[in-house]
Image 1: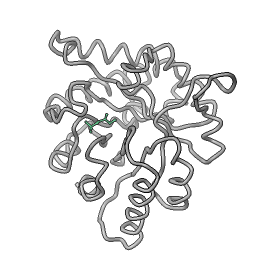
Image 2: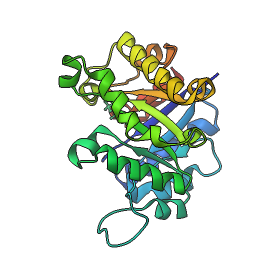
Image 3: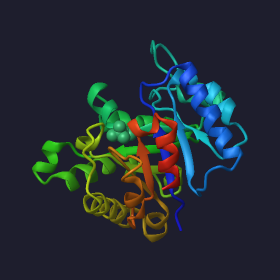
Length: 252
Ligand code: 13P
């Protein structure tokens, strides 16, 4: 049985006080066992607050992830952050391939493969995002797009390396739009993604790989999404910013 996972991607939101208050309150609720859940919980705050976030959550089951890393180990890359820097402050999870990185920072599959390589070198767990645009879905290209995104990146890895991955299916048209994929659309794509893992790595890997859905997940739709056979969790943007809503998603 795959454990359900909820990941909060805060994107470029929450300053120092909002971050620390949120995490301290969340932790208090967890320690007082005020909520009932059996999910893996990961929070991805902004770079400046990763260290303090990790310190606040240290020794608990709540984990912290970075939202990005640079593809090079170190050097003259002004403004960038390396995997080894993050590792040195105890971070070992990272989101890669998010559609906002692909779109606004022109991260193509070749760069993403380099990011995967450096992340694996430092033994990061990688939350790797794939998903089609509205235009691509209208052209009925969603399966080809997702297959290609995986073929040119994750599928270069060995089956031994795949244990470091979570896959997140995030249809671009559902991100931040309030337009969630139907349960059927999401389940169909998740089943397809699992079948690609079966084809590439065999049954054991495909049964184990966690495939999360992202795109307008909220406290009202999370339960039904997470009930789908191949949906192992949610990668949540907007609805993870408010503690009450996030707690509802965790408990759904
Ligand atoms: P929303 O939940 O705001 O649609 O964002 C989804 C997302 O991009 C998570 O990575």
